[in-house]
Amino acid sequence: MTDRTFDIEMGLLVDAIYLKYHFDFRGYAGASMRRRLKAAMARFSCETVSQLQDKVLHEPAFFPQLLDYMTVQVSEMFRDPPYFLALRNEVVPLLRTYPSLKVWVAGCSTGEEVYSLAILLREEGLLQRTLIYATDINPQALQRAEAGVYDLDRIAAFTLNHQRAGGRSSLSDYYTAAYGRAVFDKSLRQQVVFSDHSLATDSVFAEVQLVSCRNVLIYFDRALQDRALGLFRDALCRKGFLGLGSKESLRFSSSADAFSDFVRDERIYQKQVA
Image (cartoon, rainbow, N blue to C red; front, side, top):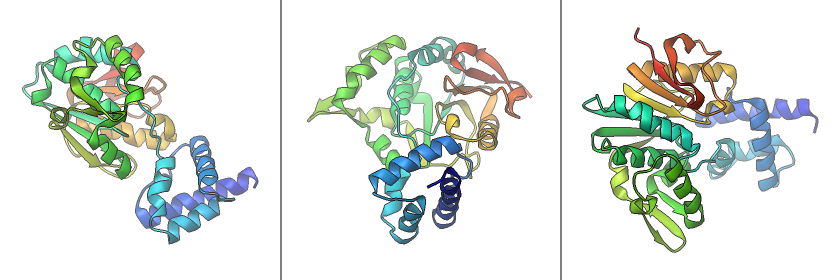
C-alpha cells in the first residue's frame, strides 16, 4: 500500500468514526495516527485501513478495542518529577489562598496523573477542599482510572518518582497490595469526578484554578492544539495555572498572549489578568 493510499484510507476511517460514534480524530497529528493504525492493523490481522473501517462500521464490539490504539494510554505516577516538585513548591502556595479549588486533568488516560495530583494535594493539606475533574475520550481508560488499580511491578518506579517530586510521605501509605496489583485508596477518589470529555468537540464545563494537560497536545495538529488551549484559557480563573508536557508549548498558539511563564522550565504558565 502506498503512503498516499494509506492516508486516503486513514481519512475515510476517521470520517467514519466521527459519523458513526462522534469521536473526532480529524485534528490528530498524521504521523502519530499512522503509527497507531499500523499497530492496530497488525493486532487485528487487517491488510488495509479499509478493513479496519469495515469492522468499525459493521462490528459494534470492535470500536472500543480500536479506540485503545487510537488514544495513547502511556503514563506513570509523578511522571517528570520536577514538574510535580514545581507545582508543590511554586503553585501550591498560591492555591492555598483559595477557599476551595477546582483542578482539571485533561486527557487523564488511566488515571496516574490524577492520583499523583490527589496525593500531592493531600500531602499539602488541600485535597479536602479540592474537586478534581478527570476527563478523557476513552471510556475504557476512564473505567481503569476510576478503579485505581495498577500492576505491582510499576510501583517501584512510581515510588521513586514520588520521592523525587518532594513527597512528604511514603507512597505505600496510599495503596494496598494484593495478587500482583496495587489498589489506591478510595479516599483519594472521593474528590475526583471522572467524565467523558473531548478537547476536539466539547466545551468548557467549569471554572478552575489549575489545568494539567500533559503529553496530550503533542498528538494534535496545530488547529486542534489551538482549540484545546483556548478551552483551557476560558476555563481558568484570573491568575489560574496551566501545566503542559515537557515537549509542549503555548508559543505559537492564539492563546499565548493570555498567559505568562510561571515556571518556564517545567511548562507551567499563569493566566494573565484580563
